[in-house]
Image (tube, helix red, strand yellow):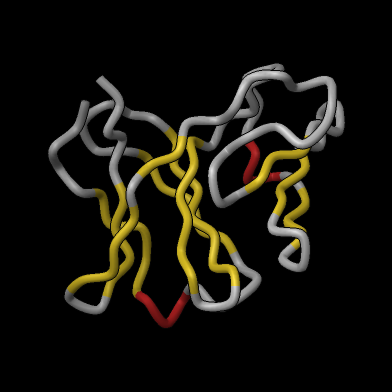
Length: 110
């Protein structure tokens, strides 16, 4: 678990319908942060089906989902739950905050 918040990007660089990625400075986990109509959500940047980066997939801001390009698994970006096969396990959800003009997240798993 990381107590250290990782800088993702300046707040002005993450517009509605966009996503940005970074790596947790302590655990090395990939983090992808999504902006859905001004609300920010962070997930581990790893498909639970095949351990492939979600951030290279397609974001559907209207549905609030991300689709893994490897096999088409889709996940809800708000909570990481799988929306269709072949994924059955959720993706880890991380905390996200805005502070000092930036977007921050961290891997808070035990």
